[in-house]
Length: 316
Image (cartoon, rainbow, N blue to C red; front, side, top):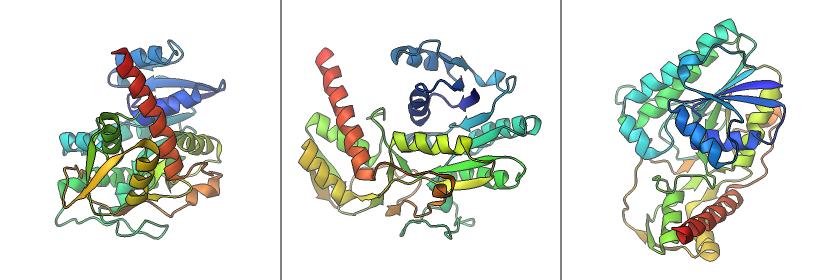
């Protein structure tokens, strides 16, 4: 039985992983959150009441774990703007919580949810294994605070080679459980489809790589059983997708209406990035192989989300 602590169990990506793990009998999860009652209520809604222990962070460290997965952080651009400079303190606090635990539990492995933003705000081309992190240290803008907070955590992790720590850099992630009110391009598209409205989007083409929840689960599962290593990995699907292709497919398959404009209302909490994805496939060295490309994953999850939205509207 593998004992796993999930820190930040209120986040969407954490919840998707918890649901994926629920089919496994050899994983014992202990969920931690600042609002444990919210997690307990959510577990009831997905028919997993009392399946897992749920606590706030004050009791973390009193148990024996084989792995800790740290999801604490912001989940959408608007939240990043609201958090402001507190993102540094929040990231450091919960990272310290786990690193201190490792001091007395050195065989426990640590999976830290990092971000592609550690590379900086300039993505005129995708990242690769040789891409350096670039920080405008003499002109640091608020859009860079999130990435720098993750970069600092990663640097601290590399300074502890005696521990098994994986920094998992998520670029883009999408599932049917995404908050449709969040300010991402994909959720802007889905709201337009749901409301039968015309999406206003800029004429700038961008490229993104969206990770499907099944592939995230596969990556985490791989890292939980691989021999102990201290390393950082970039997330990736089988293939990224550009905005124009995504819009065209959404128009054809889900009746999206859109028009290009000179400018649009968007939130760039971590900077504008034309090619925000990575060609660094180091995760393959540990056995990871994605099942979906970005477009396949988006269409699958978007269709399920819109169907659910329609059903909920029918009951209201």
